[in-house]
Amino acid sequence: MWAEFKHTLRRMRGQIIGWSIGIALYSLMMVVLYPAVTDIEDLTALYESFPKEMMVFFGAGDIMMLNTPRGYLDTYFFSYMQVIIGILAISAGASMVTGEEENGTLDLILAHPVSRTALFWGRLLGLAVALMIVLLAGWLCWVIPAEQVGLGLGWIELLRPFLPLFAVLLFFAATALLLSMLLPAGRIAGMLTGALLVGNFLLAGLSQ
Image (cartoon, rainbow, N blue to C red; front, top):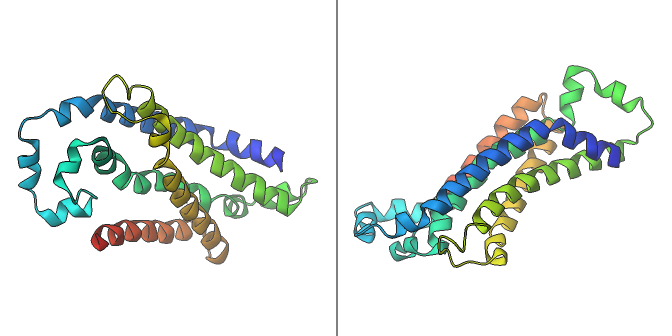
């Protein structure tokens, strides 16, 4: 199992590095802009000019919350990050097993002395750790400069919203994996799971 775990991380190292850098840079940019955004004069009046329904859709039901760390994080990061990083989770989940099956190399892999159970759990654990690394990069870029920009949140407080985000990403990765085993092709499973992810995002916003 551990051999498959390490192999999965090696195979995904390009995605891990690329996504980690992207999420880290975006997180760093948003945390650095926090003082500038919240210090804008008449910011509340500006937001009040937008339709109330639109603001509620993105989790900003209380306009005054946008000037707080919680409101800032929800509106400018967590409200749509599950959709963005969900692209990585779904694509990796849909190709985790069926990728080798479709290119004809799965039989060669299973010819080695490795059980199907070890192969499955090793790859699933590797995918989970890959998602954790990407989220960790984003979390660190919020935590490290938090005190300098006056965010006023400790590392535990900043960690808490990342935990349900990780759970959502892992759920959709597992859904893509399941559908890839039931549907004729992995790309169909990825497209269907992506539609479910976007649908979940829209329904969550509309329900508010």
